[in-house]
Image 1 (spheres, rainbow, N blue to C red):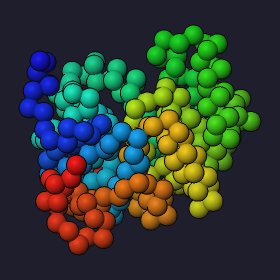
Image 2 (cartoon, rainbow, N blue to C red):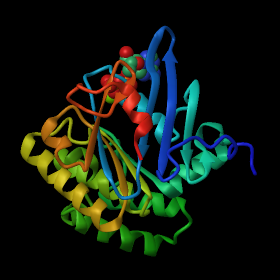
Image 3 (cartoon, protein in one colour):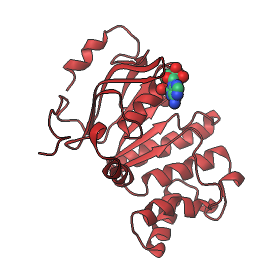
Length: 246
Ligand code: ADP
Ligand code: MG
């Protein structure tokens, strides 16, 4: 048993399980004992006001940031304890991320942006381009293949970002306010595309949003308040309820 497999916390049937996460930035306590399970194939919305710790939680679950305390378990591995090299491999092969502003590479065309994760995974250029084209097609932006991010609309850019996040067929996608910078029609198109594709491919999605219309695309919703996860977004049940989940 490797050192990061011991002490496996509860949430055994979850794809990713976070327990009692604490994370501080200087004096700011972004997470104060946050626990949540992401199950295979589900779309889980995490809502909460600005500054409640949503992005911090996503970063810990996606292995982008290590929590100060607590455990993040993914497929029998303790992400919070994995060596950096193994962690970055795992992020590349098993996870996809989408942020509020797609964070596409501005110098690359849409096709090259989407092909990049495949090239990094060792695929040949021709195969990578072919697959990237298919994923642009799925998100209705194949027509933008040769266009650079700066010349696309926000909605098109986010659909390219989704294609890039999903092209490696990850087990989980982490989306941090993916529609936050879009008008409501573009937001709907992006969410419809994300939800449809995730359901089709059985990809789990952790969806951060403070928009109820966006959260409505999820199977389940939890709320963060002051760095603590609450199972009922409306706020009528205490945080301890998380321990009885699944
Ligand atoms: P949300 O995504 O819900 O807006 P965040 O997780 O981004 O919340 O932030 C939670 C708290 O932690 C906020 O008070 C924020 O200012 C602080 N914070 C987050 N990231 C950093 C950072 N890198 N450096 C300093 N403070 C941070
Ligand atoms: Mg945030």
